[in-house]
Length: 235
Image (cartoon, rainbow, N blue to C red; front, side, top):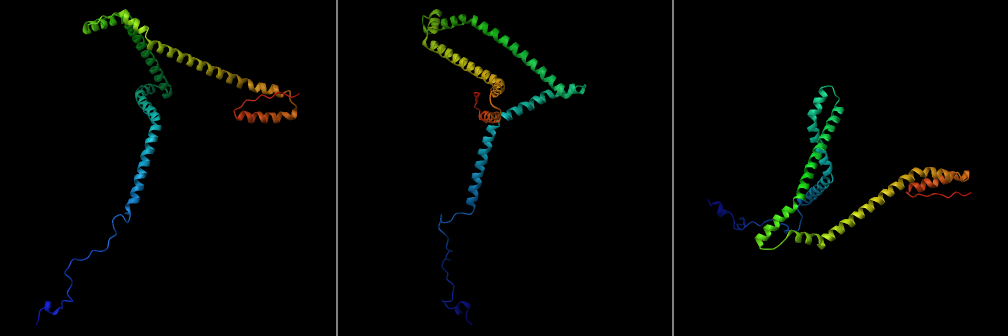
């Protein structure tokens, strides 16, 4: 009996060469399935971050006020609770605590302002001494011959100081003019609003009866558009 290898013909034997790989699409020919979802998620995250940043910047002042109110409430809570435990209503106790804080703050600011004013007065009075000491140090260090009168004259008669004073005066005059115009406009608007109904009634007395409703409707429409119109009576 012959062996199994000898009974199989060479044509029937399997090929011993390398196995061919299946055909694959070239790189870049097809988009991965996860790429659109990743792009949409990234854009959504960027949009959410931008929206959150904008909302935070818009609500910064409100958040700061809420934070200040929270800490202020925590600060006054012991005093309010102590007063409420002795029969006082919480609203009245809160008002009393805030009034006390306001009085204390006003006293502190007044005391601090008086101390600051005193310090400023002392500095102004001692300014020539400070200037003399600085000038003497400069003369000794740099071997110069400066005097306080020369420095004061150069500062007082300098061009930049003159321009600064002129600009300050111009700005103050402009601000005063603007405030005067605004106050005048507010007074005129207030007086016109107070007198306009009486003027309208007085002028309608000279019109015929059938024209009263039409005139009133016309004035109301003109008044709604922000324009003031006084009709001349026709007799």
